[in-house]
Image: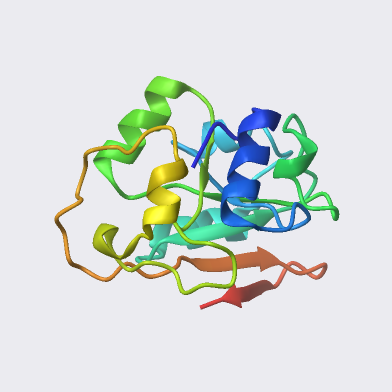
Length: 159
């Protein structure tokens, strides 16, 4: 990941992953207050889903602003997730801005399910590796992704 407000950092992650720049990343935020610095509102229906949903949940919000163009989809949307991990939340609060969340793989290659599956190519090209949970063998899964339709209906983009 990287500082989602830094255009150069975003370009580096896109390049490292060999990912098209028109496919923005999910951003991690410490809380809804942080998200509201970059979108107009958290619709009440989304607020309810965030409160009750148990799996990691990324939400695509409309009318994003205040972020580099590489962090915002060409449709003007941005995806945010509030992590359920004390270390991530502490890091986000200390940093004070959203961070890019992305799997540690080259685009088109299966995502690593734990630290041990990350390719040496990725590991050798990053600036820093956080010494946290590297020995875990649990299989990580991508977050559920939702948005609201024009009619304000909840739409699951990824389950």
